[in-house]
Image (cartoon, rainbow, N blue to C red):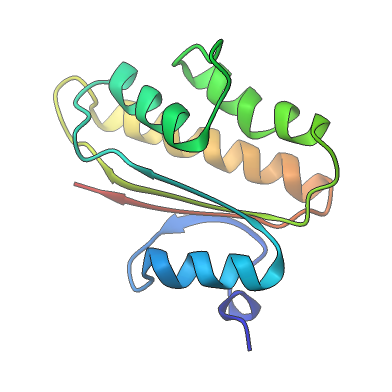
Length: 132
């Protein structure tokens, strides 16, 4: 039985009791894309978004801003063809003066908006995150 049977198909939540390796395995079993980014070295918005873009393999023209992140998570992937599902993990999002609570909330909101985008297309999108 796949662990995603007990997790809603379109959601964004703290990683809490889950391990990245288990999420990756469950995604693989279902044929879903698994995207992982570690942001533990990042201190600012630009560094967080650059770390995510690099880890997710976004195109070179990715702009390290929230709009570009949304576009790459939605339209760019949607145009690439049929999607079975996406599982996204972003760990160690910083809590710094240069990446404060508002920036963290905006980042999570971008992933929620992406989840809504995929829900409308009946494609599972699960995002898990952790803060430093």
